[in-house]
Length: 183
Image (cartoon, rainbow, N blue to C red; front, side, top):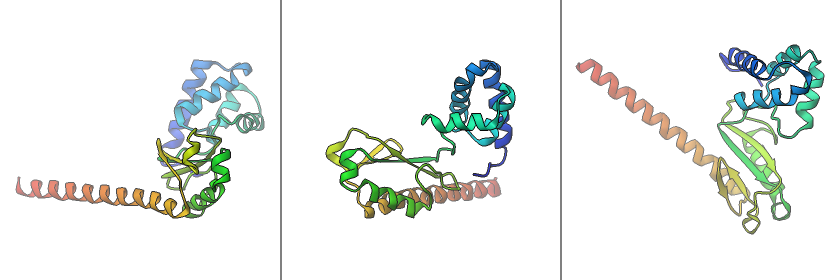
């Protein structure tokens, strides 16, 4: 995923701060990576490279650790996080179909984030709402008995919110311009 403007500078500063706090001992590698992820929300390859240089290990070793432990994210989290439950009840009632519907609609795969960083899509083991299967957690909201048509509805809701916010911003800008012209 491409970095956004100013992101490399932020990555560099955050990695340097974590290294300063944690030190450069090899046995501190996992806490260093955890600290970087806590600051950035994920482990970008640029951050892993800087950690490798600081701790004096290969980039491959950092990547091996980051991919071995499922606590680490290699993609930035989306503004809206979609988690599709794949526990037994959800799996048996169509969880895979729901996952495929989100993948198709967002044009990303499980574990990825849309290029605009609006949505990220994850598979989770169980959210504890088995009677409501299949379940999707969108941000922190539980969506129950989800069907493929409901996937479209969920995403349409975000489109509508975004358009309403843009319209509100245009209205505010127009009002401000009017006030400046009058004043």
